[in-house]
Length: 293
Ligand SMILES: NC(=O)c1ccc[n+]([C@@H]2O[C@H](COP(=O)([O-])OP(=O)(O)OC[C@H]3O[C@@H](n4cnc5c(N)ncnc54)[C@H](OP(=O)(O)O)[C@@H]3O)[C@@H](O)[C@H]2O)c1
Image (cartoon, rainbow, N blue to C red):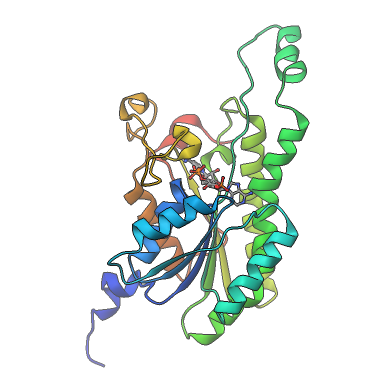
C-alpha cells in the first residue's frame, strides 16, 4: 500500500461540508459561534430560538460568501409540542440530521452566600432565595429540553449515520463548568441544572449506544464566553463583549473565551468519530482554579 498522509489533512479531519445541522438558541452567544463554525465550513445549519428577529438578522448577516447555509426556524424548546413541530419542519426539508447542538439556555437569579450566622444564611438562602418557580424554569430550559430534543430527533439522526459510511451522527449538549465546580457561583439553580445536563449527556450516550444506534452524544462545558447571558446585551451583529480586565487573575487564561476557542471545540466534538459520552471542558483553566465537586 502506498504511504499516505491524506487522512491527516485538516479538511479531512474536521470536515463538515454538506452536513445538516440544527442548533438551538443560535441567535446570539455560543449558539451563534457554533453556527458560524459549521456554516463557514460548508454545513447547512438550521438555527432556532424564540425571537424570530434575532434569527433572521443572524441569517442575513452571516450567510454571505460562505459555502454553507444558515436557515432560521423559530421555536421554543421548552414544550414537547413545539419540539415536535420543529421535527416536522426539519423533516419536511431534510431526509436526515447529521448534527444536533442543544445550546439554548437561561441563567437564574443570584443568592447571597456570604452570611456566616445560621439565621442570616437561612434568610438569604431560604426566605430570600431564588423562587421555586424559577428553579423549575431553569431546569426545564437547561436540562429537560436537551433530553426531549435529543429523543425527538433520534430517527433523523440515525438516518444520517446510515447514509454515510464512517460517519456517526452527533449530539452536542452545551452544558457549563457551572455543573462541574464545587462553588455555587451564587446561582444554585443554574449550577444544579447544568450538573443535570452533564449527567443526562452520559445517560443518553449510554442508552442510545445500547440501543444500537450510531449517534454519539457529548457535551461541551464552556467557561466564560461573551453572550447575551453574560454581557446582558448584544450589538447589531448579535455579538456581545466582555471586558478582558475583569478576568485577569481569575482564570489561568486571564481572559474570557473567544469565539475561535468555541469554534475549535465545536468542530472537534462534531467530527471526532471516537468521542462519545464525554465532557469537553473549554474554560481557560477555570475549573483548575475553582475545583470540582
Ligand atoms: N456564555 C457563557 O459564558 C456560558 C458559559 C457556560 C455555559 N453557557 C451555556 O451556553 C448556552 C448558550 O448561552 P449563551 O451564553 O450563548 O447566552 P445567550 O446569548 O443568552 O444565548 C442563549 C440563547 O438561547 C435561546 N433560548 C433561551 N430559551 C429558549 C427557549 N425556551 N427556546 C429556544 N431558545 C431559547 C435565547 O434566544 P431567545 O431568548 O430568543 O429564545 C438565546 O439566543 C446556554 O446553555 C448557557 O447556559 C454559557
